[in-house]
Image (cartoon, rainbow, N blue to C red):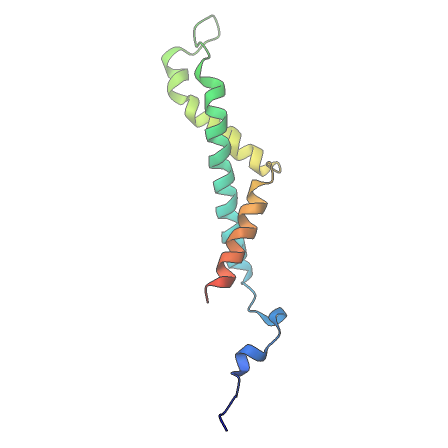
Amino acid sequence: MSDLSVPAALLQPLTQRPVASPAAMARTRETAEAFEASFLSQMLKPMFEGLSTDGPFGGGEAESTWRGFLVDAMAKQTVRAGGIGLADRVMSEMLKMQEQNP
């Protein structure tokens, strides 16, 4: 007869998977939020491209130079205020990928 022994690791319930440390979870969340902010920034940029910087309250060339920073700051603030839910989905997928790779 052949030996049909099963490694002990395979007999453990799936609920006993190693849990990521709080520091690792925080880094994963930070990465997911940075991705959402970058996505929002790219979505907001076209909204400001056609705006004229002339007029009594326009900033001229300086305004157009710094506009990208303003858009990035608005995207980051949107994420801090709760975002659009993209960070939650990205974080979920990142955690799934980490579970698949031992």
